[in-house]
Image (cartoon, rainbow, N blue to C red; front, side):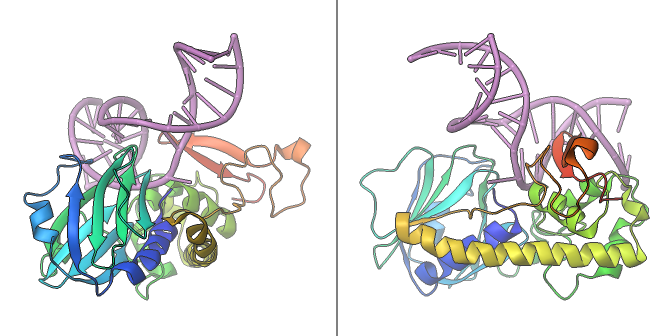
Length: 280
DNA sequence: CGGCAAACCTGCGAGC
DNA sequence: TGCTCGCAGGTTTGCC
């Protein structure tokens, strides 16, 4: 389930366990994820001190003391599991295990293997193929209504699809696109180019609001979750429209029997949820 | 270049 | 119980 808020939550959870610590052991349990691991992956990481754990879009970036940067993408099903000591043997789909000198291990587990890892350098980071074309961070200063409108201008594709395009804005996924469009009262089927001016302001604000609230929720529920299981995972969240087809729209008082409530449609092969009465 | 479907891979819930 | 089908939070590729 990792979209921007989940990746941010994972980074915040990992940082206190990894920052300032040395990777005393790294186990790579298979030759590839979505892409092959880089050459000498284990050797380039072992013995390095982790200086920073941060996020760009949906990527986790770990800066190491020799200038190396480890890039991790969680894909659809990737998780980072924190344990106080090394498990006796890796579990199913435990593809990489990082161990620091305190004994703590961080295990990358990914059933579907849509995740990936790569190594680059701090100097080469901005030009890395996976990061080069990314749009602005939606919670950053460069993101605004006008900035969004500029990137949507001329696009005939539905706004739903445009917002999933990471070069338009970085970090939104299928859930939060539906949620943001609901909050902005904009129809997911409307063409991207029709969103400018006040509509773009509204949408940019909705994106910030939805992501910001999700990060807050992730932060709070994450602590409970980790105490219980030692796992750094995904928070439970109440969505307004996502996965709520047929249920009443939380934003309006119209009759569900008459409107059908929240609609599920398919756009470019993926589910979109919205209230046709409220979103125009 | 823009837009869309398919592909990558496994797991899970629904329905028979 | 066990099978098949459809669906899943992401991204890239290839085709029109």
